[in-house]
Image 1 (cartoon, rainbow over the protein chains, first blue to last red):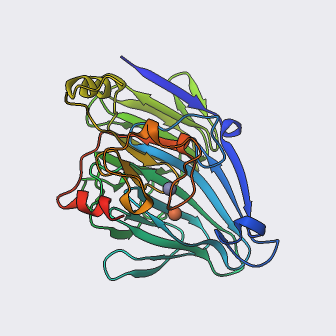
Image 2: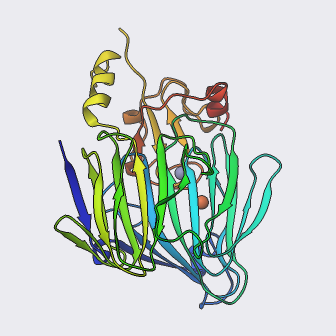
Length: 268
Length: 71
Ligand SMILES: [Fe+2]
Ligand SMILES: [Zn+2]
């Protein structure tokens, strides 16, 4: 059965967190011009009136760190897999996976940080330029895995006009402890593209970062997105100068969870 | 009677509450049901309210459950 939803740019959660008062411990920076703005596709923190997620995806948001030294101070996570795709500016990422990492990521760079049994991280934009990134949070396929960090670069100049896989079990893609793939398409001419999930049982979340995409009778503009499952392929017409993310995820269906509860004798 | 114990994940930080393990260091004995935690209980790691936890059907990595116990 095909199920889909369209999320328009204006329907997403919009949050601004300033480095002041009670949030000063959380958001880095020391002046009122330091603030994080966040556009969330799914429920996250104070935004709770939208969708809870899609498959293994719990957070998909654009975040901008404004002002020199802005970001998130060191804080702890468990279990979640956090991916960041840097769009503009420079992100300094520090984490405690293994012996620890200090990394600097620029446009096209991205990472996969699996917090597992307890990994801390800090995200900062040190320079005066704004830092803009897409953050993706995933449920892992196992709890309390050893924390890991992997990073790579997607060359936005040489890898145009084809769908390139960035995360998941493909060649050259970063490993992730979940049945999920992230791909990206950047165009410099109009074209027709087909995204083929592993099977119709997978869901695909298509996010237009920039440009125009038409899938059947749905027209998507900047920051519009589409979630679809139950289809063998997604055919779309993509305009010139367009940037699209595809997140293909395993779907956890309610029926399976209920069956699992029954089987295990839960009658709460 | 075999009653399944649930596992819930904090949507703020990923911290998990496992009914089988409880949180002994926070005074919650193993076997304490989610429904028996006070309504004003919050994530010990990040302060996220109880309503923003999600039940999961995800198993532990090898050696993971003792880590969850000592998280
Ligand atoms: Fe974080
Ligand atoms: Zn938490």
